[in-house]
Length: 185
Image (tube, rainbow, N blue to C red; front, side, top):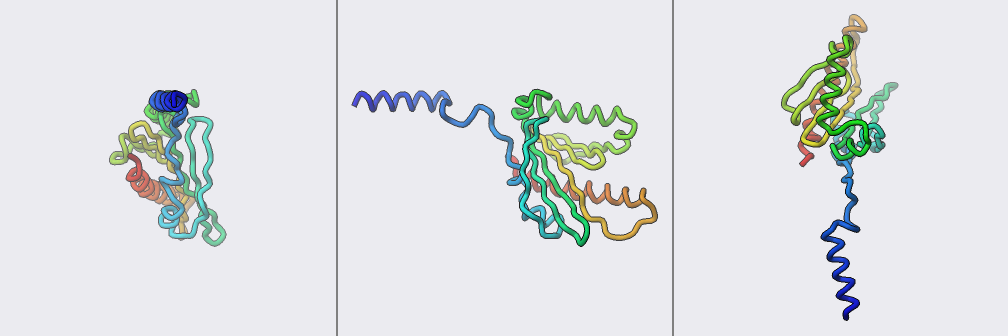
């Protein structure tokens, strides 16, 4: 009987101390759960394969990438998710807020990148578009959305085509962001 009490006491103390429980480092939210294949199919208006989940060494986050096939074109939609904790553990940046600040500063300092930079409101705590990726911070969570939508039609010039593609990519990225943000706590 005394042995059982000792085991019970050890288990109780261990659970209260966090030993044997979840690891100290909480995993970032799974991007393939925040943006599902069903979601990607709706956004692309096409059939997509299951998402490819990958880890990111730079910020300790994860990304999920979906592909849609349009006749001879392959298009992609990806969501990258990192948390302040995973960012800190990776050892390059201090937090989600630090990543956002540094990314924005770098974009604004570059002549070329500053032309593509657009601060956005209404998405998380802060958001910006950098020409082909949408960066969003909500609390301690960093999201990066890359959308490469199909672009039917013909254009007068490559500049007109690029402008239309950028506009459509931004619009799709914002739609994806709203869906993903609604699933974050």
